[in-house]
Image 1: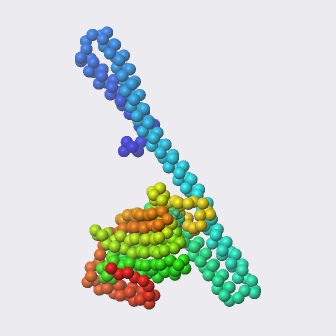
Image 2: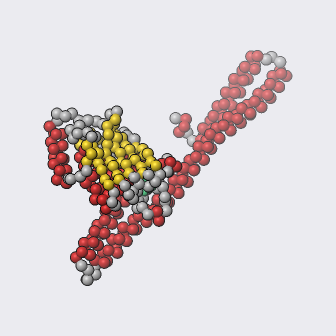
Image 3: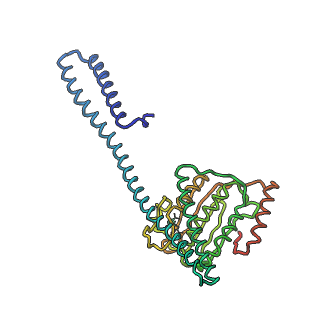
Length: 338
Ligand code: ADP
């Protein structure tokens, strides 16, 4: 309540109250203790000085505390301002690159002499650029929704194993294109992997992290999957990529943060993917963290509560059967079952 009143009102109010209390109580005590008028007058002077020193000291401590708070807020605001500017520059670049691709290649499509293969090649570039643009816009929307508290959690029953399989199918060719080995790991059998949670968000967090793992890995392998520990499902995405220095690991989940902000850094991205992951994980009641060795690789982890479904629910069994049917048609892939 007191904290809500503005600083200048608070300090004037405190000063007045202190002064009145001091005059009232000190005068009453002195009147009771001392009869001599001269001593009383001298003591009144000492009392006045004491009041000035004490209130000056209190005022100093109070203003100091408040100024430190203001200074910290100013530094934070300046940092956030710099990050936002860097983010805007970076996102402009990120948007311009696929847009140029779309404009350039759609112009090439108008050429009368192009072959059928060229048409396919150009439309592929246009589609990829369009998807990239959509991804950027979705990410910006997500981060602003997280910041304004507009994200909704949808609880539904689904199988973690199905998510792992879907993700494998989604990213396998992307990893293969870079010559990376790609493995997924399932800790539970299909029935025990049925849980209650927000399927879309868990899928999106994993997608962002796998996408980053592929992006920041030049050679080697990527392993992803999950384990169950103390009523938590812990997902992990391990790569043998460029790694992250201990200094950069501190800020890696802050919004707009990229380890290397220069436009020429050679990796696309707007620096909001991990902040979105962190926002989602926290909304799901979990934690996200990273272990990394620079130049050796990184492992990102995130946890969510393991809210298991009862085995005897017919509906869930059916859902699982439908899902596995869908996956079987899109296999084969490398799965390491525990
Ligand atoms: P971006 O869109 O730039 O990928 P993110 O928020 O996803 O933004 O990641 C922020 C930064 O964290 C990246 O720019 C990169 O420097 C670092 N980073 C993220 N994932 C990895 C990884 N698997 N290996 C190394 N660095 C990573």
